[in-house]
Figure: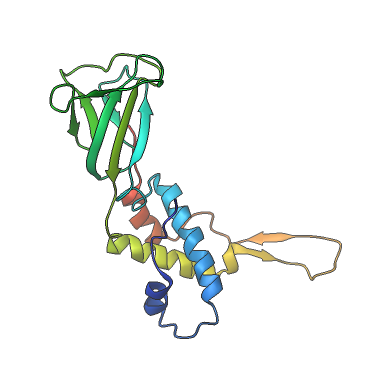
Length: 188
């Protein structure tokens, strides 16, 4: 499942583009930039808002830190004594509680160690992409459009030699990085 963080219409309105001449390029870059942002931030933002995400844990920790945030709803927390062959539902407020986008053990302590012993099903993310994140994605698409996807060939076609010249900066533009860094998931 892969949902783009912006639409072609939003991008074209932002850039004041009215022609359809570059729609294929824009669509391709929107998909690639959306995936880049999701990878960079280590979260999917909108992919699991309506569809459940399932994660498995081994226990031996005080809480299960969920990969997707913000958590919308926990659909279930289950335990398996046979490495995921069969599952038993655990009861909220009796065995576990949602605490700051993680599942904490009740009573407070560590979850029992058990390989693939715990399963958490939940929905998380945003119903609508936050405006600052949309802006960062639109700026990233523009960055790649202006820089021809950041790779330039320095030799004429048909020559034996091959040289690739990369854009001087190996990092994201500061205005984009500032926004994305606010959304990076920290699993510690």
